[in-house]
Length: 77
Image (cartoon, rainbow, N blue to C red; front, side, top):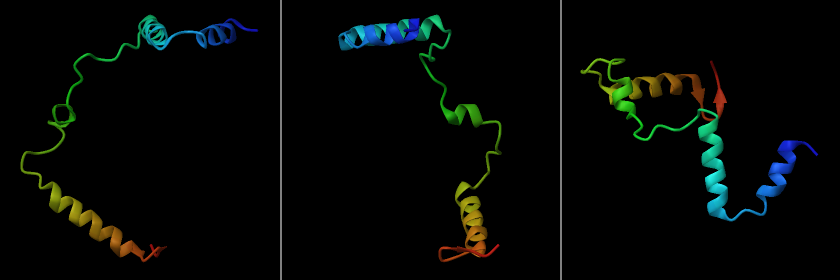
């Protein structure tokens, strides 16, 4: 039995709050602690698109192009 298998076996006997504590410890020890205040996607992408972008118009255009390529359930492109 490997160390990992042994740890998994021991973890089966932990109470839910102990499992949470173990998971938090492992995440922090691996340097993968999630951000406490995640950024909004709007903030992350704010510089990628112009302020006057009409999302609805772009989606309508894209949808129209797809409809030209598809007829029913059959791809014709």
